[in-house]
Amino acid sequence: MKKLLFTLALVLGFGLAAYAQPRAIGVRLGGDLDVSYEHQLGKNMIEVEAGLPYIFDNYFGFHAAATYDWIFNFKSWSGKGEWNWYPGVGLAAGWHQCPDHDGHGFLGVAGRLGVEYNFWFPLQLSLDYRPVIGYSFGHGFYDRGFYGIALGVRYHF
Image 1 (cartoon, rainbow, N blue to C red):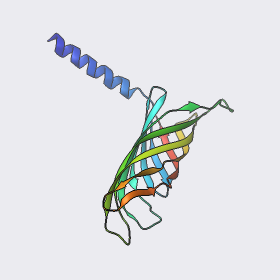
Image 2: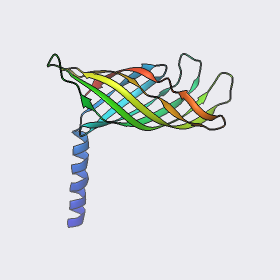
Image 3: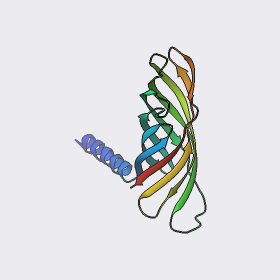
């Protein structure tokens, strides 16, 4: 019984600690259209995105990426908001169909380099570059995700 109570207390404590961390949810707009979720882990963050690829190139499909980002603060000029910049690395996967090819899946490594501004109210704006390089099943080297510049608009809570 003591082990059960200890386990329940431990699970509840980890759950509350995860819930207490700052988060942000929103969209990332660039060549792709992504739904984006950020979860801070101490001073750093994990960013997870899922979306539709190449909305301006007549591609069809879906993709997802997750990166671990290291956050570095700029000195605040106004004293109200907070500027951060962040590099990161992670994984990406998805399935795409080009207008002139059959559909194919891909798996790759994702990088990230970005800058964000957290307003004093719950809004976050970011501009980042997230290249994806990897293997496209049936087509070889995947470099289509190399052009991943996007503007992020998120609700920060």
